[in-house]
Length: 418
Ligand code: NIG
Ligand code: FE
Image (tube, rainbow, N blue to C red; front, side, top):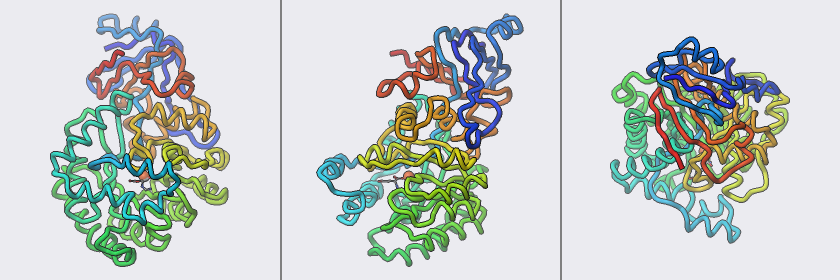
């Protein structure tokens, strides 16, 4: 299949984009892409590719931006129920931590998720995946963390593996047993940290051998935050995970700065996420290593909080910046990376081109998939979007409606004409 006549083909070629080089779209005017099977076989101008491949069935993308599928590098995809009532409480002035202390927040979703059958959990999650695909996400990270006991955490991991096999969206799994202190531990974070860093991680490792079907080990993540896990507890969990060869992620500096970003840099984590209250010196430490800084602007937006990641510190420090949805039932029930881009342009002060790179090739790096997805280059997976707009700057500029007309995932075409 030859996709041709794109007003702008955004290739994002050349690998993840560090520091102030962020925003190199690799733009080809009147661009074309040849897709063979699941992969990209050629990239060039329409004139070049139509001359070289005259027999190929054609897909006309005139007047459209053609770009890589979005990679959503941070989601809490699998949960049951909703927290609409809590949203109203927040509007009336209650903070995230106050709601959590009153038995709400993450723990109320833990209750609903523990009670849900695996079928119910899969069907609620599948609905969200369908929306994500329509809005252009073709690969997503997916965390556990609403089980907080071994059985439910394994059910969630199994749900992620099943939905990944079902497709078309591909999922990169993360074990987030360290998301909150479950009620049976009565706020005894030390004992729960012992359990996660000891038995739970070992059991997850063994379970993965039997159920992972040869997939690489999942990431291990921890919520390093006041009211969740202290810096020391986070370090214990991540060190235990590293000793078992799990790649690492961390939720750092969402509400308070406990030093999680520096820990991520010291431990060589794959990513450090949130980074709202991170200091310049911590961004400089991240800038000297390959840990991707993942900003999640839907969370402050969803919580109506005024502060966002100071993204320019990441760029000035030479770091790798990605953006993601943080899709979850508390702060950020948002399946749309287009909306994430719109927020990033306004609150992280990124240009549309920078936000697009942060949502594709750099986001792929945040889940170690930059060799396969995140750009349109020969040999990579054919994960491609055709937008209903002629210029990439409509992303960010426009928001709240879907600008994705066609999604191509591993060479298969899904059309969503309005
Ligand atoms: O990334 N910060 C911790 N976890 C989520 C919120 C999850 C929830 O509220 O259910 C986050 O923002
Ligand atoms: Fe999160």
